[in-house]
Image 1 (cartoon, helix red, strand yellow):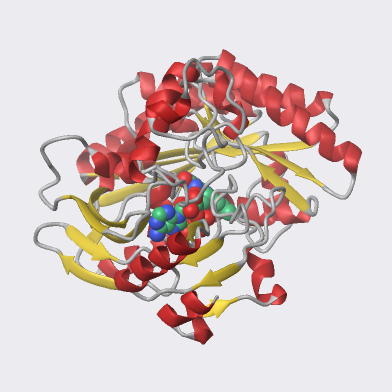
Image 2 (cartoon, rainbow, N blue to C red):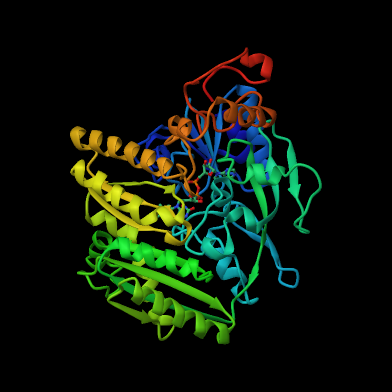
Length: 473
Ligand SMILES: Cc1cc2nc3c(=O)[nH]c(=O)nc-3n(C[C@H](O)[C@H](O)[C@H](O)COP(=O)(O)OP(=O)(O)OC[C@H]3O[C@@H](n4cnc5c(N)ncnc54)[C@H](O)[C@@H]3O)c2cc1C
């Protein structure tokens, strides 16, 4: 504690139980671990000195942004210290002419969007948690969002990084040119879930705001026909900026909440589709999407007449998770990806799993990407219900993998899915990943206990000889 205070002063070291309570979990409230302390650095130099102090003491540390992660990534396991970057929240430079900005990791995603709007630019990755989550967290999780379909995920929008390595050394990766010869280590850090170091500066790519935007709300009798419409739009060769589906149970929760958007509560599902680009092409594409939705069984399709209506359509989607609080005290947000053509059948199976386990399961998801978010509302104080939630979750993951999918689209592995990695990787796949992690962090002090399975399914040779130790990673 003394060594931490020597770096940032006593007021930026939290250690009382009531101060640490908020750091016991992230958005996945099922996994909990109380940190030994939380420190709030203001710049790269402080981060580097804090990391060195932890390492000297043999204390593990974990970087944290806003704690909205949904896979337990920001938990301090093994009595570790949380290094929270929320005070590093300045936009350092905007270069509108070249289309990039340099930001500290604690900048909130939506604040960056606001800061560059006056230049006619935007930062494309927009997780639904954009009002709170930080760019540092987005980088660590390679976050996506509704507009990932057209614009890509965080990795497509980060040109360069500054990283404090697990030994305290400061490293720069990538360049504003967007191209660096040699191995793409920038790419390894993005999606590295805070296990390779602490990101202390990010150079992000900014995109010109589209000339025009059209937002549609298609109302379907059931979620499966909404999924079919998504497939039909893509098959037609259209690439909307976003295609998001909200199912009936979610619509009802939203309409009962402060996020009410005037959606029909008897609709089986709604599809929110957004198209952007040049006005001439947009009118044609918009008509095509309306037509395809109607052919796939939409009861009606509304096109937002103005910005106010567009915001209303989106309120239903962006407020969905908050509205779930009305259904039960706890929410388990699942995250898996399936090949888009398999969406209708997988969704039917997912709903059947929820019914079979007698659970309140609802769906709100990035349909254009095939990225499912089955949400289970439950009460963790009921052990029987909790056991059913866990069993159903595992079955959902297995169903998605059997359909050719993967176990996470954007929320990461963290502590939540580390023991399910075996569904998609065998030991030969994990070996090079462990070696990469060990190259950055041979002493395993930076965010230990995340991503890798806690038990090895197959050890073929002496792990120490391979440069990492046998302690669960
Ligand atoms: C309502 C809701 C909606 C969401 N919607 C989406 C969505 O649409 N798309 C999506 O992708 N995710 C979504 N998420 C998940 C979450 O918001 C994202 O993963 C987000 O990027 C986490 O940011 P954070 O600042 O909260 O990070 P945290 O939760 O604090 O941390 C997440 C991970 O990042 C690491 N980390 C944090 N800062 C740094 C740093 N400076 N350097 C290195 N590692 C760091 C942590 O160690 C941890 O492993 C949603 C979550 C909620 C609660």
